Each structure stands twice: as C-alpha cells, then as structure tokens.
Length: 259
Image 1 (spheres, rainbow, N blue to C red):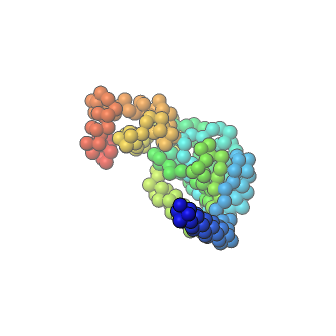
Image 2: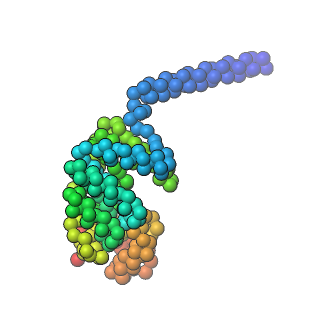
Image 3: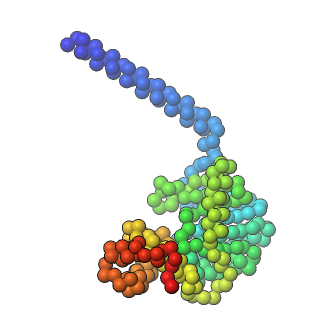
C-alpha cells in the first residue's frame, strides 16, 4: 500500500511539473506575441467605438478606399451617414471602389446613394454573393467583423501588412468578377443578373441551405427566394425540394444557366 501511495504521489508531482512548464511556455509565448504583433490586430467593441474608429481611419485616408457591403439594400439612415463621409473622401481625390450584392439594383434608396457616389467619381460593382463586410484604407488598415460576434458588435482592426494584402487580394478577385453598376433608374434586375441570382439560390439549395439561410447570404427576402424556388420547380417539373435538388444537380443548369 505504501508503495502504491508513493507511485501515486510521484505521478502527481510529475503532472504538476508538466502543468507548470506548459503554463510558463504559454506566458513566454504571449509575452513575445504581445511585443511583436498583438497591436497589429485588435478588437473594437460597441457600435459607437466602431463608428468612431472607422470614421477616423476614413478621414485619414489619402489614396484609396475599398469597401465590400453584403446584405442587399441598406437602411436610409446608414446611407445618409455614409454619403457625407464618402463624398468628402472623393472630394479629396481618393479612389473609392465598392462591391454590393446584385439585389441592391432593385433597392431605390441604395441606388440613389450609389448614383451620387458614382457622379462624384466612385466606382460600384455588384456580385450575387459578397464574401463578408470589409473596409480597407490606403491598403494599410482594414476593418472586418469579428466572426465570434453574433450581433456584429465587435470589429477587428487589422494593420498587419501581410493580412491586409491578403484581404485586398480577396477584394480584387471579387472586383474582377463583379458587374459594373452604371445606370440607376430600373426597379428590376437585368436578365443576366437575375440568372446569376437564380443560379446562386439553387446552388445553395442543392447544398442543403434553407430559404432563410439563402436569403441572408444573398441579401434578399425569404419571399423572393421562395419565388425563385417555385420558378425552378415549374421548370424542372419537381414535386418536392429533394427531387428539385436532385434534378438540378443531375443537370448542367448551374454550370451553363437557363436557355
């Protein structure tokens, strides 16, 4: 019994030593990380603090402002606030490029904002799906939502040159695929862009997304998604969602688009 108790005590001591070593290593790692890179990626919490930090960065911007705005049409109060800041930046000679989703082409408040921005020299393009919200000033500082924040109450402010270059590369890749937005009076999407949205909806459906999840990703209403789904069901003659997904996946519809 004494021998068993001695073995147990030795193992406990060994385990404690291992834990102490791990804890010390963690402290050294965190200390060295803090001295080098922690200030290059920091979190800002709260709508007021995020807005103030972003406004200061945009005001200090001297050459280029890149923005990706998912979620479809934006609320009027946000558009009014953004308009003054963006026009001031364009007035300073800053090149501004913005990517929205195709669905803003039928949202009149956003179109009115885009028209004024375009007249001032800004460039706007649209995609069926935008990767995430992103703002980059002078390719030196970037703002993205914190993925762990459910309500988007935390933003990450990134000044690490390598990470900023990576984000700019993602933006440029999306920009090349996006469609220019040059005219503003229409309340309906052009046929080709309607087809792009329709293919995106059906692609997500085939991959198992619900109508609500698809609507959120594409910046549109659930009702609009349901309308496109009904159109596809009639086109393929399907009687269920599962059958429709099978028929679409079996066809080349998502690759070639509708006739």
